[in-house]
Image (cartoon, rainbow, N blue to C red; front, side):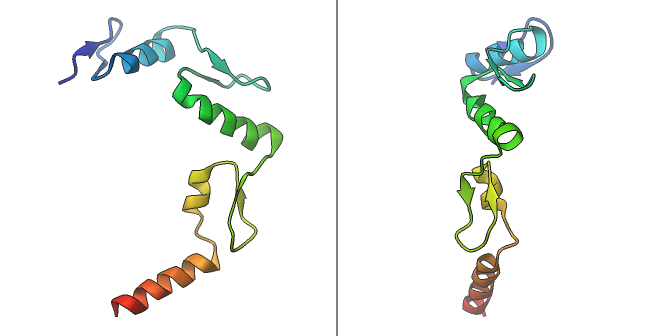
Length: 101
């Protein structure tokens, strides 16, 4: 059940906070979290972390997440987790394959 409905469109959701974010993002010009370098903006505090990642990736070139097995670095933890060009991951896959066989 989705008890909260947008008064401007057919959007519905389970949580009142999601409706507030939707209305701010889709139907108003209110974007409280904005980048100080460009016009990137976000609506909620939960996307505040994305704003910090945006600034690191696009403006300050910070890469706090680094692979312990190679030179790969990333502004986002999820990119490091997806990182597949690493011999350690190939080794882990090989070890798993050996265990399964």
